[in-house]
Amino acid sequence: MRGRVGLFLELAGLTIAYVLAAKLGLMMDAVAGFATLVWPASGLALAALFLRGNRLWPAIALGAFLSNLWTGAPLLVATGIAVGNTLEAVAGAAAIRYIPGFAPSLDRVRDALGLVLVAWVTTTISATLGVLSLTTGGIVAAASFAETWRTWWIGDALGDLVAAPLLLVWATKPPPNLPSARRVEWAALGLTLLAMGFLIFGTEAPTLIIGQAYFLYPLLIWAALRFGQRGAISATFLCSVIAITGTALGRGPFARPALHDSLLVLQLFMSITAATFLVMGASVVERRKAVRDLRASQRGLETRVEEGTAALNRANERLVLLKQLEEAVGARDALISIASHELRTPLAAMQLHLDLMTRAILKSPDQESLPDRMMVKLTTFERQIGRLSKLIDHLLDVSRITAGRLELALEEVDLAALAREVADRFDEVLRRADCAVSLQAPVAVIGSWDRLRIEQIITNLLSNAAKYGSGHPIDIEVEGDADSARLVVRDHGIGIPPEDQSRIFERFERLIAGREAPGFGLGLWIVRQVVEGLCGQIRLTSAVGSGTTFVVELPRRPPVERPARATELSASLKRKSQPRVFDWARKN
Ligand code: ADP
Image 1 (cartoon, rainbow, N blue to C red):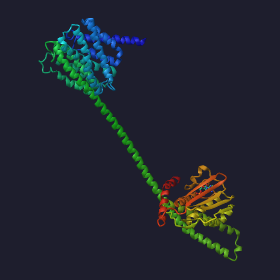
Image 2 (cartoon, rainbow, N blue to C red):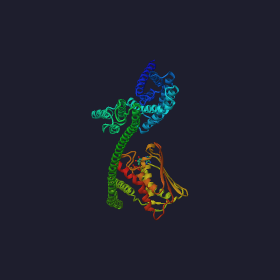
Image 3 (cartoon, helix red, strand yellow):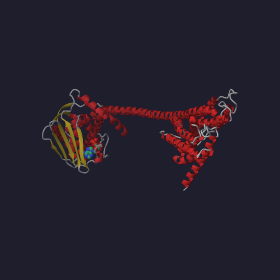
């Protein structure tokens, strides 16, 4: 209901506005009373149908019909003219809607040019139908068809060029909240325009030098440059009103004896002016927008450059820290290397003297008289020296491996015989740990390996089996095929939880610490480094409470050429061990 009333009110309002605008135009010395050079009604109709929809067409039809009837047109003639005026407005609105992305603010040059084109083309409909109606109705002689058509067309086109843009721009965009300085400027521009308009069109031409219409151009340029499209269109409209009023009063540079002639020259001038400043206003806005966009993207770019620089600085700082860290790690490795070398010499001397002392005591005829307590002390002393030398050996290996200096002296080695030898040597330890050993190494398994390092592998695995599987048997197996050898060390001890099975191969990783299982967490790490240095691999299977099986697989002939082997292997170790420098550093 409210919608219908609203539509009715809109239709009624538009009809009245159209009739008034039409009457104003028809007062301007219209040809035969109907074809006029001033027709703001066409602009009103175009803007109304574009902004409020085609459903308002009845208001245009009725307004045109009534105003012509009022001016004295016969019923049929008024109907014909009304049809032409309505079709012109509907076609015009449809045409500007067809322009892709058309915005009634007319901010784009393409929209402004589109409107100019629409104004010149669609108004031919009304001119043609209107003048046809007049000639058919006998109001205009057929001989005057062309002149009447021209008048009608210019009047309608100017309505589209001057009135329609004003309505479109002011109806769709709320006036910007201008700072007071700009408001003063806006008022100054309006007053200057009025004053200049009065000087040009309020006086009798051509008596005054100032009475030239193009004197308005600087003011229109001012309006466009400072106030964009809104300024350009409003100023053009104001000029048009002043110029038409002055010319209608017989004043200004376009005044001729006949008002029709005066208006013809004026409206030709105004049509060029309106089209020019419509396009100029749009291009000023477009330029401003481009500058704004450019500034925004420049700001964005600056922010990105600043962020990039900050990130670079952070990366640089990290790099410096990393370098310092590397130097610190290098210094520590060097210290470990020197310290373990230096510790080895007095330790070796102590070991020698302990040996000599033990032998001397054993040889002495009255050894029986030595108290047992003394023997126990000697044995403890020997064991502690053994532990100390093992620690130093491990530290030396760590420093060699991290420095890439672990050299492998390859020779023909029988893995089966070596396993047997180590197991024999371990007899005492295994007995103390209450571990029975079964060795299955039925045939010789010969390969090209570093004897001492292979011994180290077997020793470490066997001592772990005794340490973490005391009281349970240990199985050792050695077997081989044409290309590879396999060493298996199986215990039935405490086992290793699945989540810890890979980390125990890292440096200083231990699952239990304390007196019951002394160690440094280095044995398996060294084993893995040596195995990988020999191009083999080590893996384990384990279940908590049931024991652990370590399997070492080695190629019989590591794929490295003999003379270059030591260096290449150490280089390969260096590559492998380098990243761990940082692991180590993290741990400490
Ligand atoms: P550690 O000197 O501590 O024995 P390793 O590198 O040889 O150093 O071993 C690392 C850790 O792996 C040990 O501390 C232990 O917790 C675990 N581990 C090694 N071998 C065994 C095994 N046979 N059974 C159970 N745990 C083991």
